[in-house]
Length: 96
Image 1 (cartoon, helix red, strand yellow):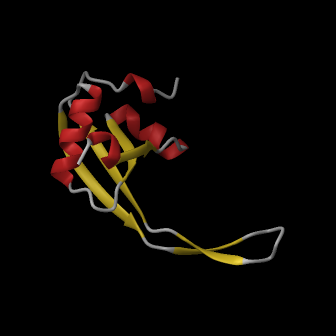
Image 2 (cartoon, helix red, strand yellow):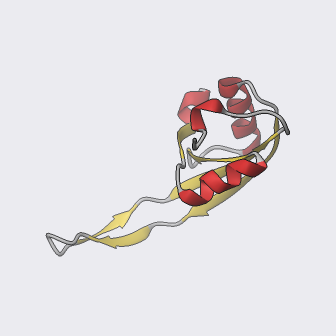
């Protein structure tokens, strides 16, 4: 798969920005992506050396719309936590 298809977008939450201090970056990724594919994609896209990749799958969730009082099923999502080598940074995702 193309690296741009594997990595959907970065996660920019308060918790993920705190993890960047330990060189851990968080991305939403494709459900079919494996750890090795994510490792190769991040190293190609951002020119960094990836040390470790952890994955978490968030199952489908029931959500409720406030205005219309309807419920729907939010999709299943996959998140990748990518640890890069010390001294390297992904400049596009810096919280500062």
